[in-house]
Each structure stands twice: as structure tokens, then as C-alpha cells.
Length: 131
Image (cartoon, rainbow, N blue to C red; front, side, top):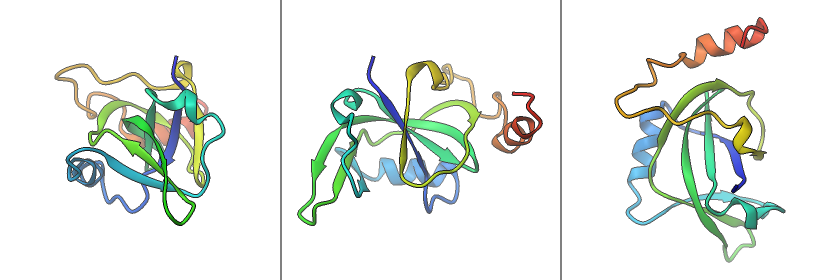
């Protein structure tokens, strides 16, 4: 099983704006990170799970990694956002690993994020220890 990672959807105003940014890239979307993940070889074929408003809201499959001229790294992503069942996730800097067992499931065809728990409600229930 490939390894996944989580990252905040920094500067995204909404899940729709994140989707628009991803889809604006024809071949692959590039995210920049300072360091190459130690377990990068395990992550090819995994996904980057996006955190928005303290919840995992979607994922983008990881195509690979490439180094930039300035020494930083690109995380090469498929230019699409696959919606997942909303799951509370605290914000963090950089990225974190996520195993398949801990990853939320993809939403079924025809199922919308509104059918799953809204991020704000999921966050409040998590604070209460109910999810």
C-alpha cells in the first residue's frame, strides 16, 4: 500500500478554489516543499490529502517528486481533487504522513460533501470527543 500525506490547502478560499487551482494545470500540479520526504519512494501512487478549515476534504494522487534548481522539491500531483468523507484534522506546518487505515474514504458517485459531515460540525464534535 502506498503511503499518503496531509497538507494544509494554504491560500485556498474554499474547496472550489482548490479544485480550480488543481484543474488549471493540464498535466500535473506542482506543490513546493523545502525538504524531500524521507519515505518519498513509498508515496508514489499514494495521495496528498488536503486540510481545509481543520478537516480533510479531498485528495490528489501523487505522481512523484522532482528537485527544483533552488534545492527545494516539487510534489507532482494529478491535477484533480477527489472528494473524501470529511474527517477532522488539526492544522500543522508542512506535511505529515497518513496511512491508508487512517485516511478517509472517497465519496461515492453522486454523493456530495454535504451528504457527509460538514467540516465545522466535524471539528466541533471532535472537540467534544464524539468523533
